[in-house]
Image (cartoon, rainbow, N blue to C red; front, side, top):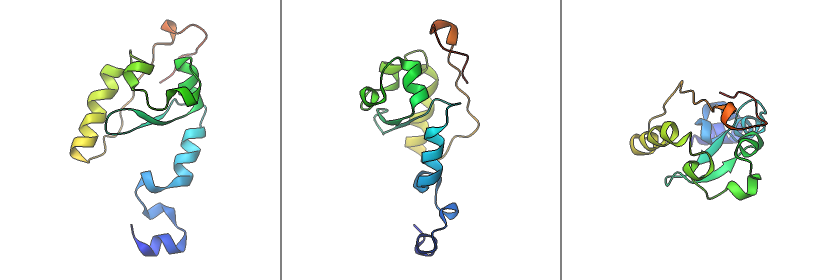
Length: 110
């Protein structure tokens, strides 16, 4: 971490995962379902929209895998997540779409 950036309060020079305001606002967004995974692909943080899509409260999702929560997304999410953890490189412009028709009471989400 750049000590100058930390002392000036400017988060924009920090890596995204170290920018608490950006992470918090992204997690509060109601237009995307979002989870943060650990190296074992277990959920460490999840937003309310993804919890709604799973049909479980946020606190019940922490510690579960994507496969346990939304198994239809696992084939798309797991290989990409493993690639990021193995390489340390970001993967950009990936869109995973949930088939809302398979989840009564939800809208179409991307």
